[in-house]
Image 1 (cartoon, rainbow, N blue to C red):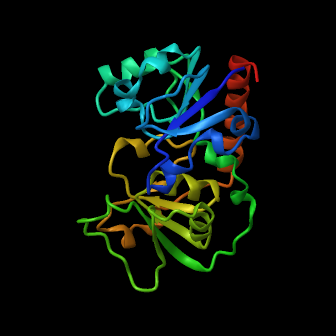
Image 2 (image 1 turned 45 degrees about the vertical axis):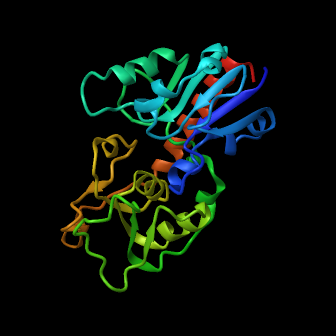
Length: 252
């Protein structure tokens, strides 16, 4: 197998987008590939792996000569849901792929491939829950919202660049309240009770659903929080299956 290029929102302050590439979790990929920010042109290569994250809607505009010259194009852990039942942008991006792994449970068009961060060892390090509730907020989506931040409840935003510290923050709460896609996902992986405060339909398709609340009323909605200890095992199993499919396609 020749060079593999991994593309996602790598040069970003959004920690969820920055750490969601399989390049960072499999040694055979880091040894044989290169990670490139989605905004950069794709260098000559044999295969391109896109994702994870919610990138498919804009991917059709970023595909260049070297993307189409590559022998294989793979989307891994991307969001495949869209605002409207039919989207020409998504259709063009899907059509360009040889294999699509969707992070959206229930989208039967594609193979389920949750965000690859689930295989990180940070989820195996025990952290004692020291707080009844912690907040984890989307940095700019939370601005302007009438979202209570009660005194005494620890708060972290998703522009924190330390993945391990982010997971430790989530693990420190018995209940996690969040309007971050990855904050919800990571808290579910930790087996936490989660109250998700969604701002789009991308929050609707986790392998195991969180509880849902509203930004302005979440303190009175904490009883809706839910989660399961099965989430981590289910997502790791699905990731291993998709990794095998990628390996078969790329002869790795």
